[in-house]
Length: 110
Length: 114
Image (cartoon, rainbow over all chains, first blue to last red; front, side, top):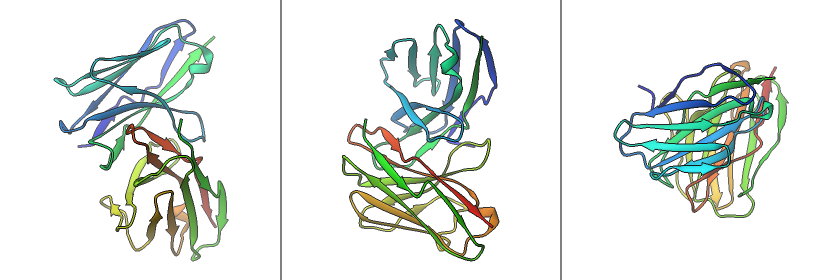
């Protein structure tokens, strides 16, 4: 079983829509979680960290559900520029391995 | 955010030769760096965890004698692909975690073996 799993999509949504991605993790000892954005043929860039209490940054909200072992990313009022692949990542701590999901492809349509 | 620099960004080499990729953390010390490989339309696959001053930890299925990792200082890790073959052609990315446990990525190296 993979450490981190997510629905690859693709998700095609109209501009202004709200879209949510989920990502499950298998290791209950995982402590650190993040969402990354990756544009085509570029390196991943950190979008936001995921805290136990939830984390909101503008149109983006990330949440962690330890009981069900998943993290989520909610994007409100989707923009064309949000089109990208969104990767979730989890690991046990600063010096331990860090695993990524397969990525979820999002296309925002005019 | 923290800056991680990776070099070269692109390299084309002949089959059987070796290629070295460098990963530097420019504004923070990275005790641990990670090396990933990404094939087209696939996700990042962790290859190995590079620890400063000690041997790297390789993921299952990754040949340590083929992918040599050296982490000689707190700001530099290198990955050498030895005796490269066309199937090694891929996008290699390094990352380093800062003190907040957030990972920052190098620009990536696109390796093409001909």
